[in-house]
Image: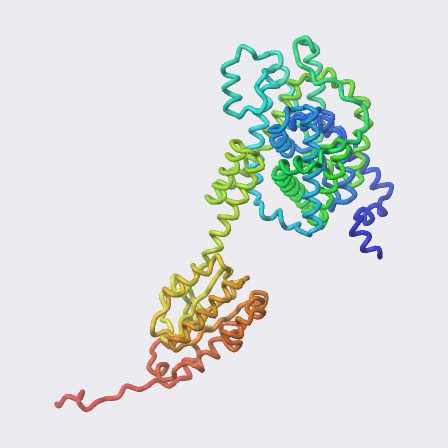
Length: 592
């Protein structure tokens, strides 16, 4: 096995040998910044997922290392993520009580299955698969998930026993009916914590605003009575991620399968979007297939070390780049430094109020809503706005995995609806132009050749578009213009259905005494025509590289008698034909 093949299997062999004193220092500082940031995030995201807080930190210790070694991006940081966390909770909570041993076991099984799906897609080189999920779907899904996150934290902020699994409407009804149960001290702690975090981030994004706000919230909670008046998170265990064995029974995998596939898609889309976004600034070339493999291995291996499903993190990846990271070692340093931080900070979480954590999660959920992006989509496209609204409402009203599928289906529906109606325009040369430029007759009323109909098709000719194109062509056929020139320079793809229709059209035109000619069709678009023998059925001599070459050849085959009588004279070649002079009949002469 040569060095190139080894680097494809172990991508870290490409960048690891290039590490030097300067890059190591930069990566260490970036890693320390990331470790400080992920500490409160990991705890918060695990709580959103319905897991004990320590599981978020386990994910932040294991997954970044695996993704850094086997992924493609040199700056993206993988680990617990907010949108992924809420999907995990939605998927597992229907089978086990939140935070229970069964819930943890199923969450790890879901993570393993998610990783296997991602790894399979990467090995099958289906990196382009994520392109079928539009950006609009992700914006709508994230906004809907953000609302669910914010509403879900009201029970922590108010310290009310809202029944687990309650919908948005049920949650508000419960709070409205039980306002006497609200713990106003908890509300105060939550508001102060979230407000401080919001303000610090406004001052500078480099400030570890979440960590400082949580420390301040803990101090405030202590002053107001601590555990006697507030529920506390509890002390985090100071230990390395323990080995875990997910449930891989057929029954478990079968019921988690649909959720795992949706989660795999969401994770890959999020990771690919982050990696590409960072690459536009760093100039790095991203390999989507390798990124799939990196994410798949991170989830697969992580599931055996008490890590729940994760993906790339927008916030931590952005901080990583801003802090000056040079190589993926920054993510590895972040994971190692997090272990050290846990030994110092873990005992202190015993004084952290749940309300403070609820306020932070509420703020993180609020920041997930891309308000400028939503405004742009609404202004730019009605169809995309419909997809946005459907995905948003589906996320809040249905199971989250179905929201992603529904968004995908509607995106594809509108795309296919648009591409299934390619435009067909009638063209004619403009006699007032020296070069006889072809003009769309809808823009300018010009005379047409009485023997040749010139049509331009803009769009792919595939099974979904054939009926629409056929109906338009039939509308333009008449008894006088027996020949058709199809200008196909705007056609990028022709499938079997499109090829068969062209053969049928050629035969139909022949029955009328004419011929079908095609000009400007790209060689790539002719692949099916050639391999299927359709081009030979139509006639190889009927295909021309350009309109001009087609006209030169077609003109020589037109009926010269009709050309002599024609007054249109729209082609340059028409000047070569001597018109028939009007003959004077004796009967027309009047005596003087």
